[in-house]
Amino acid sequence: MQYVLPALILIALSPFLWLYEQIGPEWFWGIPASGIAIRQLRHQFILKRRKADKEAAKKREIEAKSRKRLETQQEFAERIHRQAQENIHAREQRESARRVHVAERDDGSLEVAWREQMEEVKRAWKNGDFDFARTWLQKMAYTLTAAKAPEAVHDKFKALMVAFTRDDPLYTNIMSQVVPAIKANPGVVQSTLAKRFSEYDAEHFRYALYFAAESGDIVRVKKGRSYALTLPNQQESKSVKSEGMRLDTPLDLPGHSFIDQLKWLETWACLPKGILTQRVEELAAAWDTEQGMTPVILQCVNGKPWVWPAYEAYAKENNEECEDEARQVKDMAKHVYRKYQSNHRAHHRKLQIDTLTHMRPYWELCGRCASPTGDENATLILDADDTFWDTHRVPWHCDQLDCRCYVNSLSEYERNHP
Image 1 (cartoon, rainbow, N blue to C red):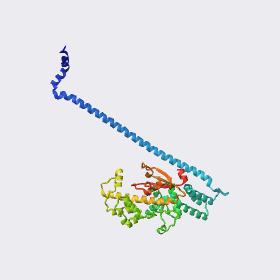
Image 2: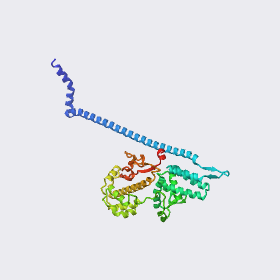
Image 3: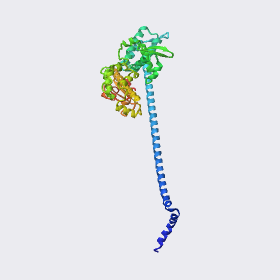
Image 4: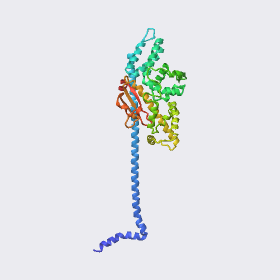
């Protein structure tokens, strides 16, 4: 029995011993090693494929969420717009039935109580209901011609219209941008200009230009199906006496002279002190256009890029890094000009809406500054005297590159009925 176990082991190993003698040690040990290696490779391939499948599934999920979020935002915007249109239509129907003041004579002609009509506009204006006052003035303008109103009524209407437009923030906001555009392009067609300022409602834009022509702020001449727009002669445009806010944006603002603004720009853009103020006259002569002011800024820096960490971070974040020094410094100069223009207009805008706080006591901030996450579609409504408006997160204190935030003033009605 003591030889049985060794014999069985020898019998079991004999095929392997025979194979070892036939193929040699290299092949004998190489075959199992190859099998192990192949198995390891197969295992790694399976793991990589599973990982790729997971990443693809995650990417599809992110894209699906993004599409859903985009669709949700679009649906939300459409719903808000639809509700706003319904509210406006309902209000117009309700107010029209109560405020018409028009009667039909026996001979079929219209007898319009012009005084009552104008009083309705004045009451709405006083209550801060600019939407109603604006719409009613437009209707009155059309009715004046249709009803063949007396000349005295025309004169009173024009006086009311001019006074209202000087106080209407929508009119002032539109004209503050339209007047420089017309000045730079005399004879520009109204339909072409409307496309350039597509952020405004078409009816609001027509209202502004119609009333501007009627009050003498611009000149409209029929051209095809539209109008050619020009400004009154230069001498008249300099001596226009406004009853309210100015339509153009002056170079020097109260508390913010042009030199003070240049000093702020030097600090903001990390420029050497005095590099802009030493050419104040050249910059002042070209301040209202990018094509005019940017070359002067380039001369100030001798056409060479400078160290500006905020710009470098912005360019990296937006994939706008450029190895060409000429293109880079030109882009940097454009950002300096655009920041000057945005802050300059924001300060001017604040001066305008400050004068209306007794009638429009709420301010609405629109854009990235209204959101901690930088959402470009964010809005924030606060009291005009809220301490928030003294922070850096508002257009007149903004230190971000390419900031497009803006502020609107709102009446009590507009705040409660967006």
